Image (cartoon, rainbow, N blue to C red; front, side, top):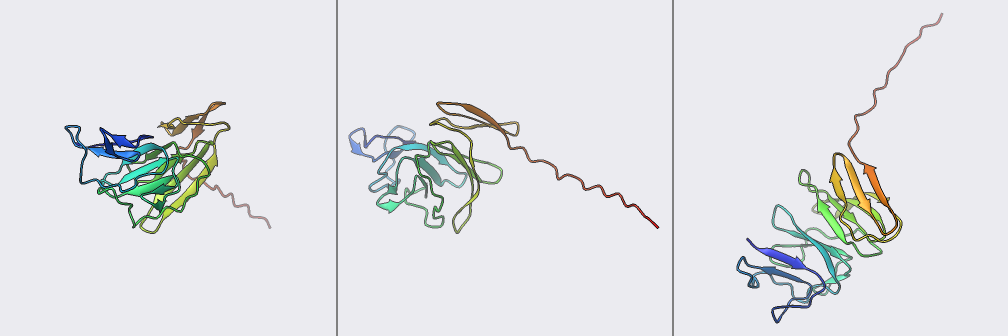
Length: 178
């Protein structure tokens, strides 16, 4: 087991680690995870996907000198995943994200209250939906349970119904007139 950590730090145990580091099970730095210059701003969340690739979000605009607009996917080696450019724009920090295990879709929440559902595919992150769920600032992870998303900010909390609904039936009544 490896451990991946992100945050506002610039070193780990005296070794340069610019806001991201991967550790071996014994707590030593994993030398096979090369991040170069790392992130230019705080990393809020890291999620390791089933294939070992790492989604990162936060208050950064570059990773290892390359553009990364607050959301990036890394290869297990620490390099930016070139097969999946990010084209979803966030104006503020992205403090949290979650990956749906069933289909790999990504739910990101920005600190200014936007929820964004994205579909990662080989060409780009395709934005499927964007919804202004809250006013105020939020740094909280949205909770998803029973077809609802629970999300709160400094000013309010919301519970959003996101359950898939059955298509309504169209009942036709044919009336013959003569």
